[in-house]
Image (cartoon, rainbow, N blue to C red; front, side, top):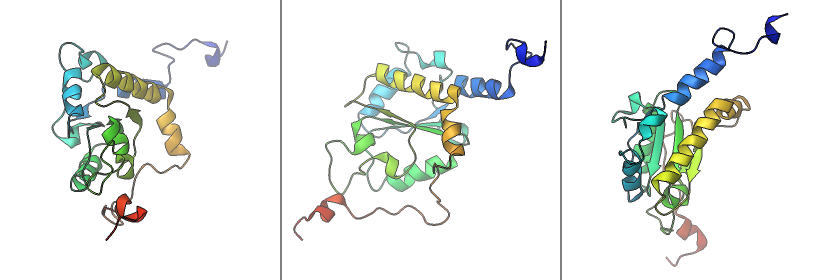
Length: 187
């Protein structure tokens, strides 16, 4: 009987599985609430929904202590460089949840002042639909992220060479030409 025939337990388990379990059980979010979705994010951390059962009881105020960014609400063009700076200051590995239709696609604000999707600035792992999404929807997104961490889909994506990082050292983020101007708004 070789080692490969033994069932996995705490002695024969793989170190990779142990690291994934530890990461999944201690995801600490950074506070980045921008609009009405932030109220629902705060409600998810309150006693009724209790995110502490997922190891997320403390929303960190410093990005250097956090590994999950929940972008809740619409991101303006002025806030986009700040969002990128906070993301760059977070420790590795880091994950992003885009909460609400405004953060995911700009929502009803299809104008020059609002970024049409936070994925233009930082890579997003899980999108949360709704306007505003309920705390239960955010908890489902967190459980989806936990499953991605457990199965290693995120590490597979990084191994495949798909870009997760935007090279901030090469050039800082500069807002592009507004979509409304590209369509043909009168000058």
